[in-house]
Length: 191
Picture (cartoon, rainbow, N blue to C red):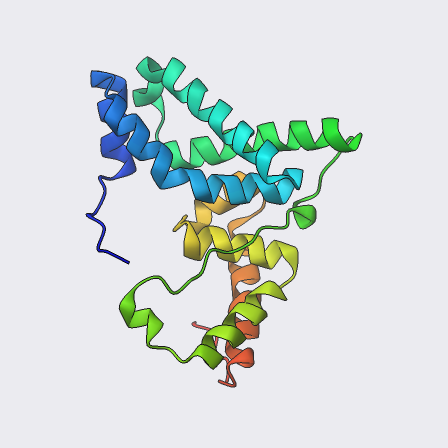
């Protein structure tokens, strides 16, 4: 895989879109977040095509309201919440239900070994880690994905999922314990 040039921060892209109506910045923001948001939405609506449509619609709204973007403190969290709300609305419509629980959100992780350094880990270890992640309870897997793959802060995860920061911390501890156990390493929780 060729080296990608590092992309601008979401905050920088947000400013360029809001102030300069920069379409290139908008496209870069879209490509930075699209896959992650689609996996998140798919976990709710259970259809990749519907999830892609939801994410695209949210981004169309971002472009339409671009002049108001500077008023948003955390654009990534804002977009995740918009995708979550639209996905839940669509899932209720598709599945004729009135509520959807966080424990029903079934997300898939992207491969956690993207760079050459990480690829040096043995294939067996990779397989054991991925198996452990896939066997996590849905809530723990979702929180682990948001924290480790999407680099979201605990506070933002708690806001997105309407849970406490302590719950985020506890679910990540569960995930890490199961992953380290799968690797045969003793688990020691940080104090």
